[in-house]
Image (cartoon, rainbow, N blue to C red; front, side, top):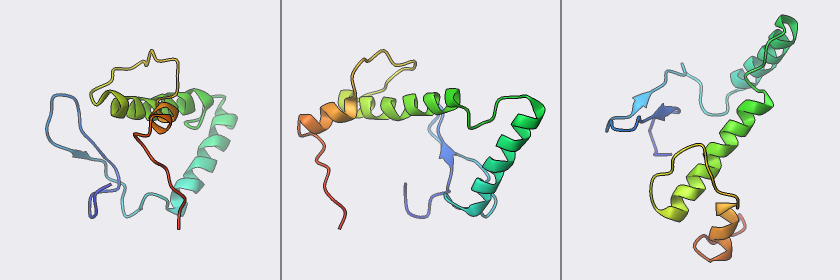
Length: 104
């Protein structure tokens, strides 16, 4: 995150400019997000549909996180779906390229 940058933005492959997602006046961890998450789960159960917070979406998000670590390890772009079988974060720590330290 960059200080002063919008809470949510993305950049498409081949385009140099960031695109901002309008989040109203909410920050990254506002209480409105939790209320909407609960409302979506209840609505999904009532409507017989899959919630936005389903396991499939969680796995997709996890793949993106692993892709970020893999991109650091390769020092380059990574295509999805991932084809790696190990944990790039663990590998980076074990090789000393990332040195976690306790908070404080």
